[in-house]
Each structure stands twice: as C-alpha cells, then as structure tokens.
Length: 106
Image 1 (cartoon, rainbow, N blue to C red):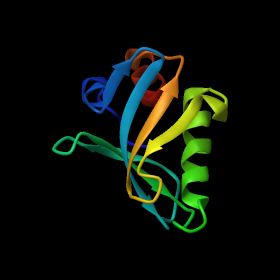
Image 2: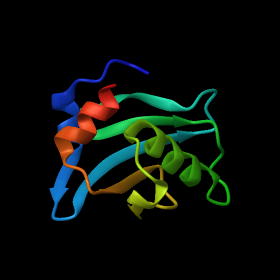
Image 3: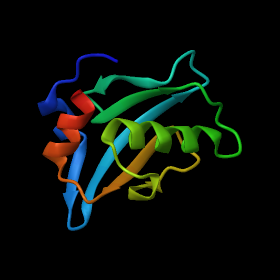
Image 4: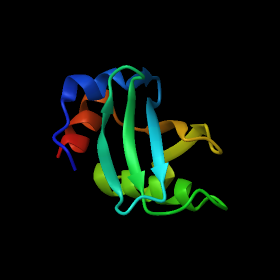
C-alpha cells in the first residue's frame, strides 16, 4: 500500500450524521488487493481488487478489505452508490472522517 496523505484522504470523504461517505474507484481483476493511491482530480481513493466484477465478487472483496483496514465489522460498511460501477460511494457507519483517514494511512 502506498503512503497516503491524510489531507488528500479527507478530500475523498464527506461527513454525515451517522458516519461518512467515501468516494472509491475500484480496479477489479488486479494481481493484488489493496489501496493503490488517491486520484486528487476526481477525489477518489483508488483500490485494486483481485476479484473480478461479476456476481458481486468485487463488491464483497471491497467490503472485506475496508473492514480489515478500518477494524470494523462488515455490517458497518455499506455500498450506497455504484454497485455496478467502478466508482462507488461507500458509507462507513460510526466513525468520523479523521479516524477513517488515520486508520487507512496505517
């Protein structure tokens, strides 16, 4: 995983009452799974996924990756937009943006 700038990570997130929304662009069918970096222009966190984009496999792998990186149960991570797209809006329940950025940075 690349070194992630917390300020840039925060630009990919939007605070909400019950958590945050994160803009993510996935690259399914990659050799490895992990965070690739940040697309500053689009305001997306770029994520590589080994799973192919078929029958929800890539979405499931994305949820599991975020669950692991954020130390949250998968039930706290919801795809609210882009289930059939590379660009996704992910809702993280119960955390503030600063905490998510800290955990993603490692």
